[in-house]
Structures are given as structure tokens and as C-alpha cells.
Image 1: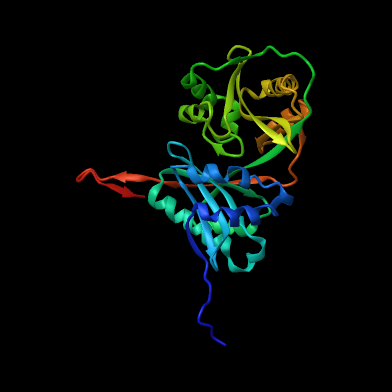
Image 2: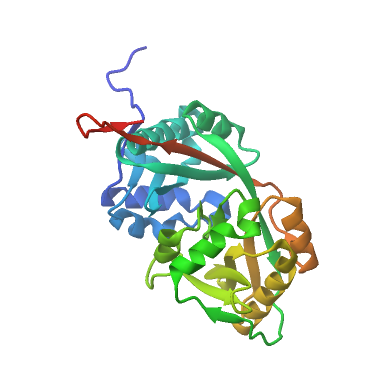
Amino acid sequence: MPTFYSPKVVCRPALPLDTADVLEFTKFIWDGRDYVPYVWNHWLKDPHGILAVAEYGGHAIGLAKVTLLAPGQWWLEGFRVNPKYQGLKVGSHIHEYVDDWWMQNGDGVARLMTNAKNLPVHHLCEKLGFHKTGEMVGFVAEPLEENVESFSPVVNLKEAANFALESESIKIAGGMSDFGWRVMQPNESALQKFTTPGTDFEHTAFWWHDHQALITTWDDDDDGEPVLGVGLAACEIKDMPALLMDARRLAGQKNCKNVFWIAYSDERIFVSLAEAGYERKWENAGFIFEKARVIARSVRRGEAIPG
């Protein structure tokens, strides 16, 4: 029998009044270990990108975030759907909504990471014009209670970025690196953004053995215990085992529970990780998808034409 009111899924920018709904349904995701409740208020205040929700029957039942990491580099994250509403294709609705927003307002490249087994998201990415560019795998190692004096702070970020982009390890990874659950090109603007005090996922950049390699680290936690996250690891492959061993020593100096790195999926990197005593933490790889939006310039009128 027809009804006078039939709720529909509506996607829109998030509002503070959505907070209660989001905190309620995300507390059951990932066995109660979802990070969204900890960053939600920060995301609401982010002046760049968009934080969107899917609304149904007057309640927020899904969300997604488009984050500007650095000029021309965007990250799609925080895709969540209330488990009680899985049959409404909420994920497709909100993914298409934020993709449409980015196509109208973004530039450069948008990327995302999803589980290798998440076939529905793979198909949706392909439908929306994203293509797979690589795979990432999480590795973990115990800290070493040994002194380390091989690291020195980076002062010149331009020099560091040029070194990173020309390094063998970054070339193997297709010019990409993890920056704390966010994958991007390690150019100068990226290093500037992620080494500025007070920023989200603040990194510390170090030279290793007087410009022989470059590494960034960031502070994470696991069940309330400190973890040393490794982000960028730019070096010759032959030096990677020693660099990663010193990262374990640095974790020991910082009294961390362990050291964690989301590494590019390549056999040469995996061999280096094994030599340095790291073990694979993720059963499934994370697939990296990206989509480019080129803005062409009209020579005649000087108008920007979306590509």
C-alpha cells in the first residue's frame, strides 16, 4: 500500500547537528576502534574540501570526507555507513556525491585507499573514473632498546623533497609515499604541510647518516600505547634494512610499543622489511585508486575549462 511519506537517501554537507548520529553509529565500527569520533570535530572545522553525510529519515547514516592534503593533492577518507542501513546503497550515494563535489571544486589528483577485498568499492571507483595505481601493506616491528645517533632534523624542505622524488625507494613506489594513512607525492608542499607544528598527523623529518636517506615519522597509538609511525622512507634499496632498523631504535628511545609502516607493495621492499625484523600486520593489502582533474586554459579567452 502506498504511503504519504517514503524516506530517501539525501547527501549534503555535514552540520554540527549531525554529531550525535555520527558518534552513535561509528562507535560500533571496527569493534569500537574507529578513529572518526576523534577527528569529527576537526573535520567539521576544516575550511578546505568537504565533509558530507548521507541523511535518511532525518538522521545522518553515512559520511565521507574529501581532504586537501597539499596543492593539487586530495584524499578521500572516512567512508562510513551505519550498518543498519546497508541495503540502501548509501556508500554509492555518498561516494558519488563527494566525487561530484571534487570534480566541480577540486584540481590535480584525488586518491583513496580501500581494502583489496572490497570489490563493491573497486567497481564504484572504476565507474567514477578512478584507476588503481598501487597497493600498500601495513608492517610492524618491536622497538630496539639501543642507542641511535644517525638521525638529524631536516632544515631545507625543498632539498629534502628533491631528494625524496629522486630516491630509488620512492621511484619503486610510483612516486608515492604514505603520510600517516594518506598516500601522496612527497613534494615540497607535502613536506611543508605535514611538518608544520599543530597540523593533523604532524610528521618529523630526519636525514639519516648525513643525507644518505630521508625519513619522516609521526606519533600514533595502539590501545592507548604510543606507536612510532613511519611515513616517508626515501633511500637506496640497499640501505633500507639499516634505515628501518634505526627506526626501531628510535621507537625504543621514544618508549613506543612498536613501529608501524604502511609500505608500498613490492618484493624488494618486502625483503628489506624482513631483513629489518618487520612482520606483516595486514592480511589484505590496501588498494590505492586515483583520479586526475586537469583544468585546461583557453588561449583565446583565458578561461578555465574543466577537464
